[in-house]
Length: 540
Image (spheres, rainbow, N blue to C red):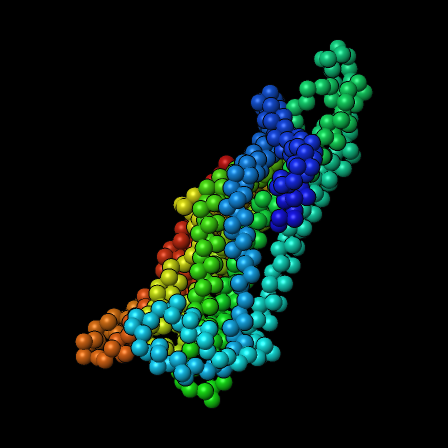
């Protein structure tokens, strides 16, 4: 993303000539395409709010959207050094798995020395590893080959997301301005010249300090300035917005690779060597995987600190924009406006969905890493390594999800719960355009036929019994006679209880947990929808 920041004028150059060019070109461009246009929109809104409510709602939505853009750009400018630190960790050169190319190690002469060291630490182990004789075979290193392919695909996906959003946004803006040329002109009184002038509406309303009539004024100056300003603010804002998504996508790929590395821990190893040497190879690889997980968590903590307040403000504004678009869509005048409105609606929902989907996918990938660590051959590992793996599993027990303002967890359930008002307004609009002789009784009967709650209650109750039985297993393990068991067996039982601590529940689309609470929520939502239909029909 540094390339896009530089060519778009967001990142100031370091040399003197570059700084002079930046002050002469980039600063005026960003000021005119972002700050000035937003101020003109708010001025128009305050001047003409009472004239046309539909136009005022559209202008208010655009003002809100552009204000969020400016807020994000300003915050990015003051936090760009911290974001550069995030990029350095994400793009670190140390993210490689060449240690999986080591298939054989010889350090028999060092084993006796290692056993004499009390409280052996990993710094001591590194010294031993550096003095050991290693044998390398890069051809059988499947993890490193998978890493190279995965990172190429990840960069391609990030580039495709950025270019696609740019294309869709610019296409929508240009369609709006091409569509307005097909609208008819109208005659109106011109206060500046005290005469009748010919006018044509702008796609988006904005205050201009000059006459905007076609016959006497400067309509085309305002037309092309709006087109330039809206394209400019989109191109300027998108690198700032997509850097979060791209960072999370990179972290998802890295987490996937770490999980696969744990699954392939025993690959490319010569098992003809001694058991101590095989365990040493396992330990080298486990330490490498733990180091990469630490870097992944470091990136997530940095992103959480930098973006939780920004996302709270942005998603709060998205709720208002969605409700405004839902009000505007039934009142559009032509097909072009309808297409643009639906694109805006889809883009607003899509932006929230992509972020929440990536956040939840990352959490699921970390859970997969936890399962891969749990499935390792624990009894064969030395006590020091088992303790480190216990700490790792304890860390992975808690789902790692980004938040909005440290209040809302950004997952797919948040995406659905964020817009209840929007979905209710949408349903009301759909019902309002239905025929007035709608038979509400038949409609409700059809809904109840489609949603047979009694059938779902039996299935959900059967699914809910599974976690209760697993909790009984956990209690039975806990009630065993622990003091009489040898230490090795007690440690294994501790691992088992750690695994059973997390409830095991089936989900619907990895969003809803299938338990009795979900059944109650389905019933409540169905009754709420029935009430909405009944009230709408009675009002008619």
